[in-house]
Image (cartoon, rainbow, N blue to C red; front, top):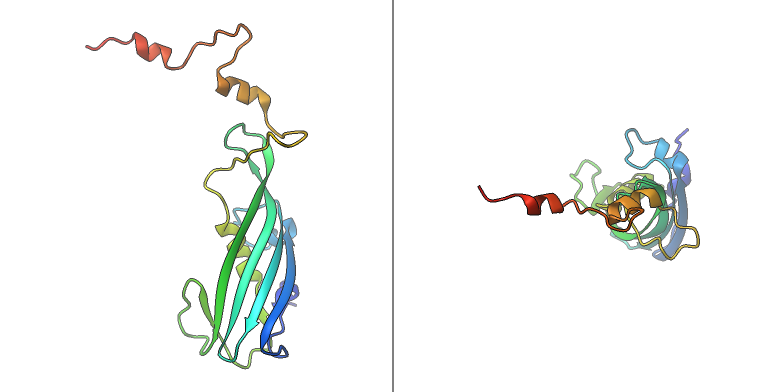
Length: 172
């Protein structure tokens, strides 16, 4: 049995026009993908499908979080993620080469499985840096010990700067 059957959209029975679907993916979903850069996460997808006579137009909107190590303080944080993506599924020979946002499906296909795209879109939403403005939270997940060292504060209040040693160097 296909482990991703819950992520199939029955396109054969749908009338032309707009249709709305919801999908949730979590840690168990990402575990099914080998070498996934996302291990612990939870995302909710809203998928709008515009079924036309010659193609399917998908609009994916999603929000959620992924568990990562903060690049600023090294604490484990639930990094909020929000993104949107589009996908076009044209009817045609499935052997045709796919493009970035265009895939080809057989006109007689009974369903269209979006699991692969949910995974890809979540991975593409990974930020370059794993930080967010957590100071507004009631209990910020920050590692304040690390932040104290980054800020240069010490018990005496007169923290030596990393750059002070460079000031002492003389031009040779």
